[in-house]
Each structure stands twice: as structure tokens, then as C-alpha cells.
Length: 317
Image (cartoon, rainbow, N blue to C red):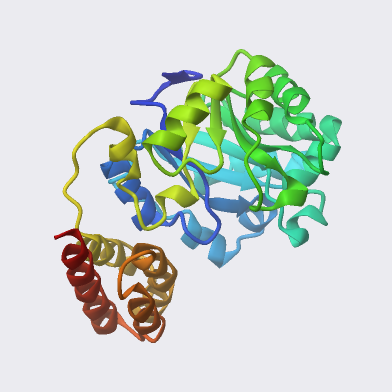
């Protein structure tokens, strides 16, 4: 598959996941077969104004063969300045967020609020394309804003008209946040509205759900977000590639990667929410989660990782 002039190695991607798609999560997703992974969403204004937190979110590693960044904002001028910012030179692809449902983002006219203002959405995408040069720009969106709306076919066509090279569609409206069933037929209508690749997103957690989404939507690929948390090997499962899995070892590797960027205590705090997903559904998983959230540093995280491995293999055998 090609996105603009960028050739990617497959049709499974891990989109931006606020609070979760850090360098460790992205590296593991790539290892298990993801063709693209994206940073957490980055404020265009925060980047332009020099936010230290933004710089941390832009950290990357050599384990990312293709580096993709997601920006959010509603001011075309700041979007273009952000795309041209020196910190983004290392990124091969720029993604624009038109789907975030969080109130503080929406109240600023950003994220999914752009679906209510297609002219502004077009200005934002056009500004990103102008600043990106030869790098492809993609757009992530929801089906609509309010209940029953289907805006994404029009928004996707508008984005393509302005130069977007792929569309990622979460099959819910802003009003749904992350509840209720995904509307696969809405994704299909969006796919039929454009000629660029479309990635279906929402409730794809295994091979069966992937195959159903592919059949109903006709999408070119799938974007797996929450389904990859605690299970970065979901990409291998969908691809039919056998992967040796030891969740405790994955936690150790993940922690090691983010520890190179963040102080030990911060890295430990970041790992707690990841461990909660790894422990989900395991016998004894609740106790592991409790101990993880009590962790204060590296030693505690490594002990929890060992517990996680024991619990996983005990259940597997």
C-alpha cells in the first residue's frame, strides 16, 4: 500500500492514542506487524509556543521505521507553523486530528468540532499539506458530531480535495465518545466517497472483528487502537503470524524504552496504565493491577512484570 509517495509494509496501523501511544507502545506494535504507528496527539500551538511536554511526546526511537505524528488544532496558521517546525522534520507523515471528543478540545473548535465546520477543516488540511511538502498528510475523523449524523463522507471528500492522502475513520460520533456499537456502514459510505486509502477504526480487537470490518466497510486497512493496549501482538494475530508472547517481558522492554526519555518515577507511573491492560482478564489480574498502581520505581515495575509472566503462563498451561 502507498499513502501518497510513502510505501508502507501492510494495511494494519496503530493510530494516535492519547496517554498510551508512547515510544514503547509504538515500538512493540511495529515489532508485531503494524505498518504505521502514530504519536499521541500534539497541540499545534503547544509545539509552536515551545511546550516542554510537547517535546517529550515527540520522542522517537530507531524501532520506528516510519515516523508519524498527529497534530490537533483549528488555526490554519498554527497548523502550518507546526508542520514546518524543526521538531517535526524527522517525521515521514503528518496526521490531522478531526475526531477527538474530549470537551476541552472540542470547546476550542478542535478535534471532532471540525466536523461541524467543513470550510475550517479544509483550511486546516490545506495548511498542513502546504507545510508538509512531499510528506503525505492524513486525516483521522469520526462519522459525525451529533447522534445519527453522517458527516464523514463529506469531510473525507473535502480533506482529499485539499491534498489528504489517506483517511482514518472511527465508526462513532462525537456524542458516543467510546460507547455503543461501531457503525461499519457509515465507514463504508466514507470509503465510497473518496479515492484515497481509508482505514476503518473502532472495536477491531482480533482477527474475527478485523475480517468483519473489512467485509462490511470495504476499507483498505484497519486502525487498531484500544485493541492493541496490553496486546501489541494483536497485529501478528490478525496477520496470521505466530508470535511468542511473554507479557511480563514486554512490560520490561516497554519500561526500558520510556525510561530513556522520562525520569524513573514518571516512567513507572506511565507503565501502570499499560500493565492494567496486560493484566485484564487474567486470573489474579486485579491483584497485579493493584500492585502496579502502588509501584514507585523500576524495582517495583520489574517485580510486577514477573508476576504478570507467572500469571499468564499459569493460565496458558
